[in-house]
Image 1 (cartoon, helix red, strand yellow):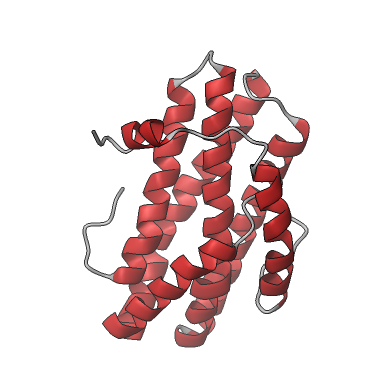
Image 2 (cartoon, rainbow, N blue to C red):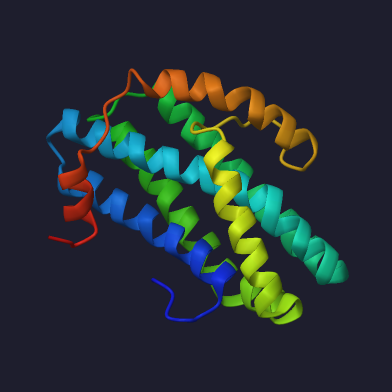
Length: 200
């Protein structure tokens, strides 16, 4: 569910969650049209991959820094959940074909997992963190989160580290390769993206 708060970090993360759901809805809506579904699968995986790296580089270290033992525990749980998603997305991209029941089933497993994970972040992790770092801290973190996503890999890399600084270095090396691969992929048009977001 989209955020209705005025907390910059919460809003940045929750807006990403909403985009994931919109892209998946488009994937499901176009069942029986594998070429169209491939575009939305590419868009969805791209968003999930960038979002996960943004959280791992910016959000989870803040949780560890400001929330003590509880923050460390929550961040480690979140990293484990991300790892599950990355492994499934890698399987989808490497071994499976859009338009098959197996692909649909595994992508649904990913999205069901993400719904639970995202809800936990919105209901527990982010409220705890943003209460500690205040509005200015939230504003800075949101800016860093959005900036990090611009340089993040756009495909799942389950074997890569999920903690800075190693994740940052590996991500910067993987991102150009991912972007080269992206040039040969199909993507939703601007009109299709507007339709997915319910805009004219």
